[in-house]
Length: 333
Image 1 (cartoon, rainbow, N blue to C red):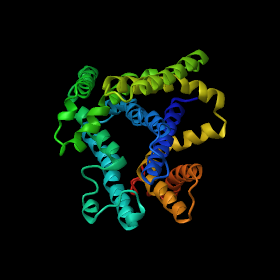
Image 2 (cartoon, rainbow, N blue to C red):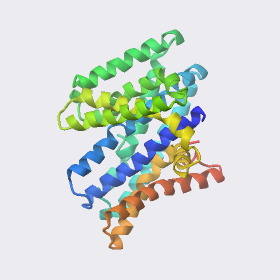
Image 3 (cartoon, one colour):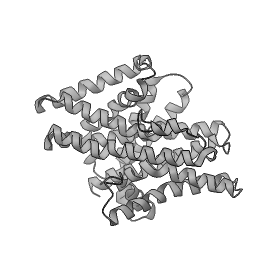
Image 4 (cartoon, rainbow, N blue to C red):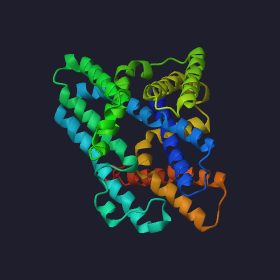
């Protein structure tokens, strides 16, 4: 299996968890799931690592991008690929919520709609955080020779800020702007430094077993202390969840590459950006329709919401690609 399949498979796992996680939380807010230990365990198992995984994967190719492109080209591409979709889909997302009124879990006002893109809200915080990280690192790299030492220094500094609790001292008005980037910069930098490890992993059964054990152990360790404010444990557990998956994936792909599940995860991984920006509209829509029909079955809500959140944006992307306006639609390349 190629390195692209490895990364797309990991993206597929990540975007599936993003969609399912939002369905899971949406059903909790609508009263379909009790605030029980089961809800908390599932919620924390997902939210421990799924967004750090995306920052890690984004870091894998960043050094090559820096070497290949100049600062101006990088800024231009990030504005087109990250900020433009952030603005466009924030307005689309919040316009739909505004029109839906009280049918959604968190109704929005006309003021919310007017200021939808900034500061970034709901899932769109990720695009802004990734933009800040990439542009911030570009600005500081004035010599290729200093690239890796500076990356390492900034990653350690961000980790220190978060773990020391200094991040909690950021004024509330600035928190939506900087907290996401600071919190996830260490994972992005880890992706830069571990690119060769992540991209060139050979198929190895024993390595896969070890990776699976590492992933499960990290999750269990986190579950044992999640009620305590141990930020270091959160970061370490998330990091080892990611490393465990990286070790496991080549073997899984080699053994099960032709199965429908694996092929499906690789496919949604290739269009994960489109699913990310548009999925909430479809997951919420599925929940609203089922409630209007009087359906109260939790498994059906979970399945319908997750399928809608994956299939709806996929349809949008395929239409946009067919008519060659996917970039204009803010759905990625």
